[in-house]
Image 1: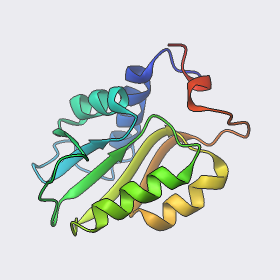
Image 2: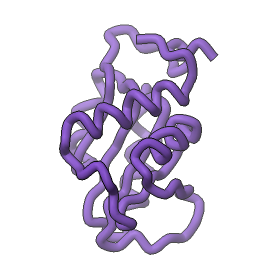
Image 3: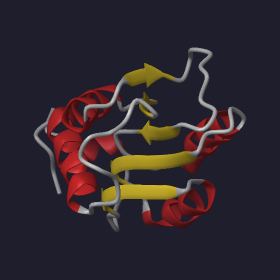
Image 4: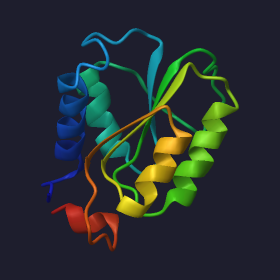
Length: 135
């Protein structure tokens, strides 16, 4: 799947989360969206899901909160692992990783690290994240 931009990817990913009926359509203030490199994806997801968008670089109180860790796509699992470990240190209720695409060889490890993972595709050929965006 090729997305016109990261906003479209964020919208489709948010819709998948809503369609899967895993979470209520109205998220409580206990749900937060985090962005790594996927700030545009996260912005759209936060808008659609009506959850606040915050940045991992801030010191935050995450205890007992649902934390969405958003990226624009994952080729390398090292960065995701580091982010998940950083969030775990704050004792969240749940860590949900969400991204439009993830490399197949990264998916199992991310599933083992996070409480839940949402993605749209696991492409066979994954050279870099930008190959999935027109702009």
